[in-house]
Each structure stands twice: as structure tokens, then as C-alpha cells.
Length: 313
Image: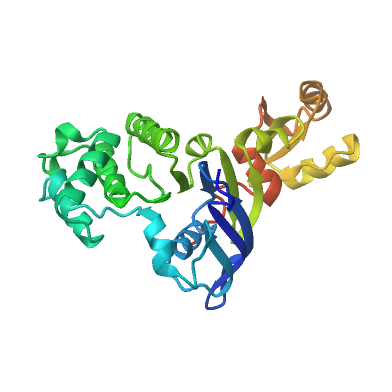
């Protein structure tokens, strides 16, 4: 285990004009873990991704990758980083091996060193039998693997992926996470992914949840769900604010008001559901009970649904 965290962010603040994209975000990624940045579009994930990847200048705060200050030594940081972008960066008219060859040359790899690196990443990503295939003939999941293979040619210690499952079907998503878990287990690669998919976030060892540029929660998926302290009751109603006020007055519980419903958590949720249904039969259009999810955590921390207010960022 390294004496340093793989990634340390301290009070990262970033503005685009008047808009606050990141507001004093601090978090730490341990060496060898798969870490997720979860949030809706506009939450700040992409801005943070670009800062870590040294694509944006740091305005305020510090970023350390292992023992390297990213701002003071960007070239050193880049040698330790493998980056896979959300937008495709492979050339569909070239074969898998040709794409890797050109990428390796950008890293300064040549001859036997490059040939060995290509064989290594083809094997690691399960692409050995696809080396002569044109990338345009591959499925979306296999194209994504080629993207990741490119980012691993120089043997980085830290793999940074932006929305890696975008456009993939469920089977390809499963295969992708098998690959990431294998890289973590077999090669000791630390992985950070940005995502807006709750099911993808569940695969991560730990998560940081971002909303409107703020860090609103962090921990393992299980820790975050358990933090709610009970099961979740959702009541759909025509007048959420009015019903929330009546529930608070009657049961001394303050529900969160959403667009067309109210939401609350309670350690004795089943008994409370029965009492709510009996107390407000005419106001309740539908009522449901569920185990806490990451979206429930998001609602608890922010007061709104995951997709309610999306902006670019």
C-alpha cells in the first residue's frame, strides 16, 4: 500500500464566469480502489475530471496524484495517468492494432517496447483475437475496450474514465466492469469513473456524490444507503406541500417535498406506511415502501430528485 493516497483533492473551487462549477470540493481516493464520482449532468463531474486530467488550469485548491502536485508537475502527473474520454477517440478506419500503435508512438514507445505493450493490453482487455479487425466493425462494448487499451499502453498507475458506460447495452456494461475489476485486482490499477448511472455507481468501492458543484456525500454504497436510518416511503399526491405539512403536524416527521410526491425514511417504515394510509386516505394517490437506494441518498442530501435540475458541467 502506498504511503500516499492515489488522489487527494483539497478545496477545489472552479468558476466559469458567474457560474460556480465546483465549490470547495475535497476528497481522497485510496490506492488500488475503484472510486466513483456520481452526479447528474451539471453536478461538476466533468469539470473535476478535466482538472484531474490536467486539461483545465486549477483556479483554487490543490490536486495531488500519488506524491505529485498536479499543478506544479503536470508532466509527471500525466505519466501516471491513463485517461479514457466519454467521446470516442479511436479511428474506425484503422485496425485495433493500428490504433494502439499510433497511440503508443504518442507516448514515445517504439520497437519491441511498443510491441510488448500492445500485446499486454490486448491480453488484459480480451482483444487479442481482434487485433486485425477494423474498429468500425466492432460492437460498442469492444470499441470501449479499445479506448481503455489505448489509455493503458504506458502502464499508468491511475485510470481515469469519463462516463465509461455511455451508449453501451447492459451486457457490454457488465463486461466493461469485469475488465475494470480485473485491472484493479491483477495490475493494482487505481480507477476513478464519473457516472450518472446509479447501477454503475453500485460497482464502486467508494463514491463521492456531487450536486451543483458541491460534494454532498461520500462513502461506500452500503454506508450511504444505511445512513438514511430506515426504509423509504414515497407518497404520490396532487398537493405535495399541503400533505407534507399535515404529515408533519400529525406525525411530527418532516417529509421532503418533490414535484408530485413526498418522501421520508423511518426505522419502522412498514408501521408508519399503514398509519399514513389510514390517516390520509383521500389525499394519497399512491404509496410505496422500498429499501434505500443511492437516489434516496441523493434526495436526502439535496432535497430534489437526481434529474430535476440539470445544467451543463
